[in-house]
Image (cartoon, rainbow, N blue to C red):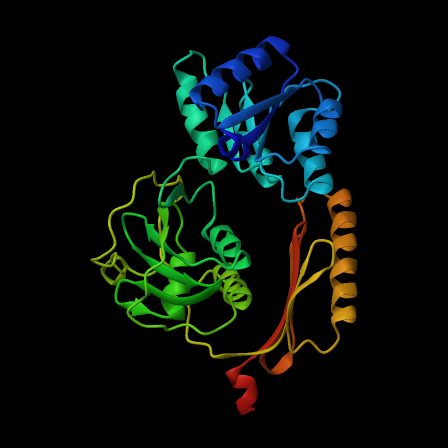
Length: 359
C-alpha cells in the first residue's frame, strides 16, 4: 500500500464552479482506482498556493474564470512555474481560444462534455498526457505533441528508446541510445536525411517503444544541433516530394494508432549540406550549464541568451506576436549562430557549412 500511494499522480483542477470541482474529484478518483490524487482550487491564488507546496503532474484549467481567466493564468504559470504541464478544460470553446491556449503552452485543449459518458474521453486524454497508464510504449498524436519535444525529453533524460512515426503517407523510426540520436530511417533513406524528413512530417501518429539495437548507427552529431538544423530546414520550406518519391514506412514498423492532424501530411527532404559545429552551449532556464562543447566563453554566451530573453519580453509587450524563442544569425562564408530561449532551457550553437571551409 505505501508504494501505491507513492506512485500516485497529482492533478490540480482550477475552476470557479465548486460543484463541478467536487464532482470531478469524486469521478476521476474513482476512475483512476487510486492512481490519481485530485486536488482542486476555485481561483488562481488557491492554485498558486498548492503549487508552491506540491509538484503536480498536470494542472487542468477552466477558461471562463473571474479576475484572471484560464488563458491569463496559463501564461502566468509559464513564467512562475516553467515546465509545468497544463491542460485546458472549458465549456466555452472557440477556435481563437484553442489557438491562444496551445500557443501559450497548453499541452492539451479539451471541451467540457455535455454528458457523463463524455468524461470517459476526458479522463483517458488527461491520463495519457500525464503518463499514468502503465504500458510498454507511449503513443500520441503529432498535432498535440511535437516530435521535437519528444526527442528533447528523451535526450535530456538520457533515455534509450525507438520513436516510430506514421502519417499514412510516410513513416519511419528514430533510435535514441543513452540520450543520443544514433540512427534514423524513413523508407529507403537512412541517417540525417531520414531524421530531417521525419521531423518535417505534419500530422499523424507516433509511438515511443523500448530500445532495440538499430541495423546500423548512421548518426553521430549532437542531438541539440540536429534538432536545430531540422528546425532551420523546415523554416526554409524545402520543396515537397512528389507522391511517387514519398518514402513509405519501413516494413518492420507496425501501423500506429492515432489520428492524422488537420494539416496535410508532407515529407521534406533537406539538400545535402555538410556542417561543422564550432560551439555548443546548453543551459537550464536558471542558467545552469547542462552541456558545453568547445564553448569559447560560457559567461558571454549566457549573457547573450539572457539579453535576448529580455528583448523578447519587450517585443511581446509591444506587439501580439507570441513568445520569443529563437534567433538565427547568418554571416558571410556560411557561418551561422542559433540562439534558443525557452523557460526551461537555453541553447547557443555556432556552426559553418562545408562551403565555408573551401572558400
